Image (tube, rainbow, N blue to C red; front, side, top):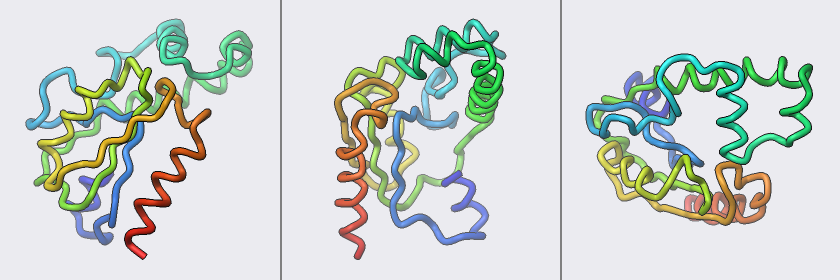
Length: 155
């Protein structure tokens, strides 16, 4: 989305961008396999559930309740569909970026954060918080402190 905002000029560029638990989008500047999408092609319901379990997301009650899964899986599948289509072949983003990940996130490791560098004109600030892919569920205060401290510098 930030690439699109900068390309179209319809909106002012962000003052700062926070990216959480995110691999870089497809780009000619990023190595193959660097996208957020965990696998090629559509995933079955069982594959989505296994992926979610592996990332430590969603309470086990949700994963065991068919009516909740029926409501939840289409939204999750739509997220993955969007991620496979996102590309950023624009000039590097010319505003500050903070990259945040969970220390135990097997899906977004520190080497994935370095793959953002070719897409950014400025050095990114990298933050690692305790937890896995869904660290914001347990690290809300720490995450909000990062955002507050960073944006406070603009006031």
